[in-house]
Image 1 (cartoon, rainbow, N blue to C red):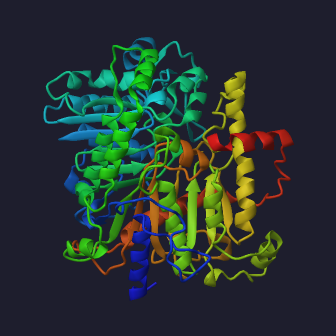
Image 2 (tube, helix red, strand yellow):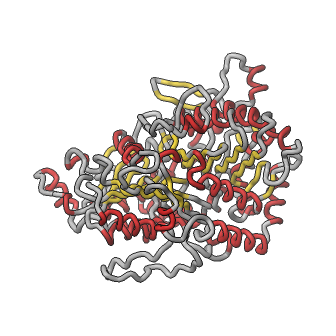
Image 3 (cartoon, rainbow, N blue to C red):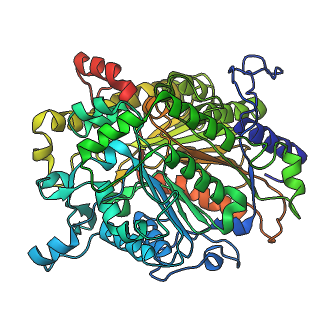
Amino acid sequence: MTWNPQRKTLVHHFIRAARGGQAPTLTKPHSHKSTTNLVRKAPLPCFALHGHHFGRIVGSSHCVDDAHNANTDRFTQTKVPTPSDFHSHLCHRIRCARERVVLASLYIGVGSNRTQSSVDSPNDHWCKEDELLEALKHAASNPNIHKIQILLDANRALRKVSYTKTSHVHDGHPSIQSHSSVSRKNGTYSAKAVHSELTPFFFSSRGENRNGVFLFPVNNLRLCSLLPSPLGEVAGVFHIKAYIIDNELILSGANLSEEYFTNRLDRYMSFVNGGGGLVDFYADLCDVLSRYAVKYDNALDDSNMLSLLAAQYTSTKKQELEASLMELFNGERRGSADLEELDAKSVTNPIAYAIPTFQMPQSFLGRPLNFPSDSTITRQFMETALEHDSSASVRLSSAYLNLTPSLLSILTKFGRNTTTKTIDNASRHHDLDPSHHGFAYILTAGTTSHGFAPKRGSASKQSTGIVGKIKDSIPVAFLILVKQVAASIIARGGKVLLYERPGWTFHAKGVWITVGNEDRGSTLATRELIDGTSSLVGTIIGSGNYGARSEDLDVESNLVLIFNDSTTDEDGMSSSCIKTSVAADWNDMCKHSREFTDVDGTAERRSKVMNMVVGFLRRFL
């Protein structure tokens, strides 16, 4: 697609929607009334990005500084980063940190108990969690580092797990011997493992203010303590994944444990040189959240910590948290309320705009947040594409496909009314011409690549006990949900894809919006691919899974990235190279996926009881 004024207008519509502007009313094409009664005082912040704000996730064993990572000689992400690349990049950036290390995650792996393993198993190598913990220890010893802040979910960080064993490779496929396969008597929990590596820093003169390991409780901790692990997480978790080292921010859906460093597929995006203010914004978000979390004290055991957390989270404290979040996400104070003002601040047009979102469960505050939530922004982003370009397509990836009715309703507006039989016949006779219609393409984990699928060599152990049986049934439950989604998506000409890659699990999530007739793939059979980059107008990356559980129970943050197809920016760079990297994320996942067509359930028919159980539990999946 060539650059034209209409495309610039479309970009402005997308930015307005992503910042919490009124969503278009699809039933009345010319109306601009909001479909949602939002209560807000200001739009969400918006950050203008240039070429030098985008970094690469490199798997090099060499430490890279900001200048090198910014790729001043032009951004080139030649391949899709792997979990190993993510691990290597993160560890070396932490080891070479000069000012600050801020990590927000569900949890951090406890490592292999290096001291004990060196005595009992001298031939064992360190696991990748050990390398991360050692990198944190190295950063803590650097006298120039003034800030080390670790923000974790309270329940998960206090769940005792066994030490992780060394990663191995079997039959060419990576696998991990860890946690559930050995006794937890020889183990610890995330908060303690991380705190022990950083204790000298925390007890130094630098260990004041917002430095420390902070535990954020999302829901009723007494309920969490009553439920057997890991079922306590059904009450909700702190799910944000944002990793800040100096002036670099890495956004991902990946946690910081062995499988996410080895064979659990995810997405990663690096913003460097401050990201036009985006890096400091996420650092400030972590500051706000840690201010209302509880600082971990190694002198207390896990049960006492849970009691302390439950006692400190009063309604007054939650109201103060909400006020701080509203202040932070006030776009009139954090950036600009007007797009033209953003453009005017730059020598030439930015190549992209970044809008951070946030979501907190209503049950936590007792009411919705007083600014647009992440799920609202996601829906408005898609509605805008539908309203302003009939050729718009949406691609959505989720580790756990459990779409809310409102999101599914929007997705089924893409494409056109037809039947499965008609689609099959049209595809065979090349009569399904997608050039005048956009479609919805959904990608999620297959049963073998599902995060709850039995691990290699441990299926027999996982199937024992009530917790093991529940975990083993989760992939089947999600397959039932996939069928429900597929029935609607396929009937509109879209596709549902299942990621099935031997030895791997799937955890990637995101949204890709494309417009224009160029977005058609090489053939009708592969039209789910993003063919070229001119059609790509925006993406969403972050922690959210776009499901009922993510929307109703978890604390999430995503980033909406909207591409500005200007000729060049102040670095002499266009958005095409960034879009190539973003498109490759989706296309690479499709290479290891198969199309789901069993909407009638003939291959995987389950009992009525199982369907009833899924219906009852879907809010927690």
